[in-house]
Length: 199
Image (cartoon, rainbow, N blue to C red; front, side, top):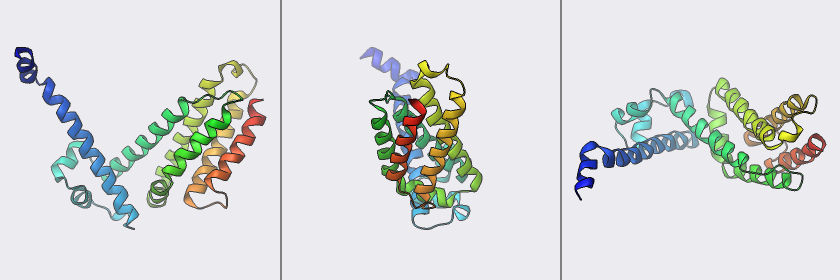
């Protein structure tokens, strides 16, 4: 009992609660941005007041976590890419399991397709280029980390980067509806191409 009181006075118990509140507030603000975009509001016309009202937080709370609307969008992008990287880095890329890698990638993108499409159509072009670069890096890093025995092959890094870039562009085009291919079709093509690259 005495230790709990000392810890509380020192701020240890309160910090844990504060941390949960920070996550809750940031999640609400991020969801508010996605909700406004889904409802058809133009990204450039969304204000901090709009986000605070939609997220049911005060402007002060907003400014505790973000400086601008673009900061919120960048946080959404980074969370998405971190989730994707985590999914990719926990898969096996051996010949037997590469199909599973592409299935996991496909399922992740399908689950997040609607929000990704709305955000991709609403954000500035530079932002989308950043997403493509991060997506490309996530795929490249995954292949390089999972296939260390192939690192000595001449031009492997260049081949993997070229493959990952093509895959990233194809997935983004499919998500945005700029391609006749679906996410599943891109996945199938990516898997077939990976067989040439990694065998």
